[in-house]
Length: 401
Image (cartoon, rainbow, N blue to C red; front, side, top):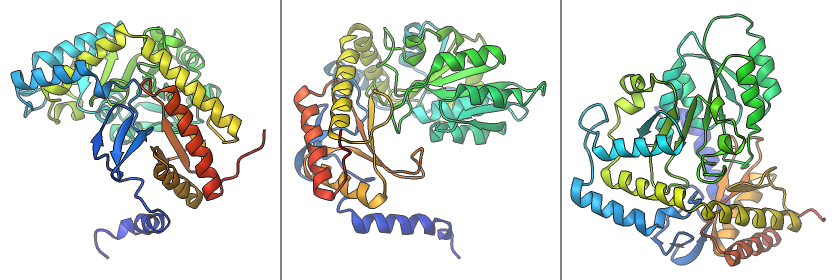
């Protein structure tokens, strides 16, 4: 036995996938960016529908100029964590901007979205506390829960009644109860019925954290996410999210009204022991946040695109997720079918994501498309036709309407 023996099952599974897939779905290289929606893959122009670039802001001129200016003024890295030499005035300005955007007292900025959820979950819940996690929560949330040493209790996906039952089984057992949910879940793109969860939170005197990674900049009158859309922001104790979706950069955040938030800077390990974001990333993020604040038409265009794509897929006979959001997934039945479909879509000129069990919610593979405000109607319609052609070419049955 050697140190890699434990990965034998993974090695076998990947070898099988490679044998049926001409291209590696987990190692696709974008050789050049033409625009927010077109890149060069395998030497040819390809429609980008798998990038999470929901508002197209990774290519915004304002962000690029801000990044260039910041790099010239501050250099390209801080070489230290936020509690050492890694706090620049830009970091504090972005935290203030985000807190103001969310109408919250405090904000902490992390170097990645993964670290934001990992750090907050692992720090807020101690060994005598209880973490209630939606069964479909992101891996970073589950990783944070293991670091926390808290008692972990999973409840059925998007099922507030199941959460209520599980919380009441504890009775009067002491310990803080922290519920962690997401606004939009990244596999199916399904949306949480947040009002129902807010009601349980109030009934059970719990704390509620929401990850708005895939809903920030997309839902709510001002783009603050599902909590704003459902008018329950007052019930949310902690909102976490990422810069790598709608904001088009990299990094993460947590905003809260709790006055003790600054204490967490001194005990949240992913914040304390990671080099802070470089100045150019902070400057670009600040610039893109201004765009989101001042251009609500972007989220309206995104949702128009998502609705058009979703309804076209259903009309064509594809099995989709339950909701219209920034993520639109097609559900297939087996790995071979899904891999061939993904490869054929790429050959026909579009890049999407292939998601495989055990990462998917119900052990079926998914073809996952990220819809962006920057996509044109013609690009949306072309992707629908590519899906239909790919289904015909690889033998994916479509249900008759």
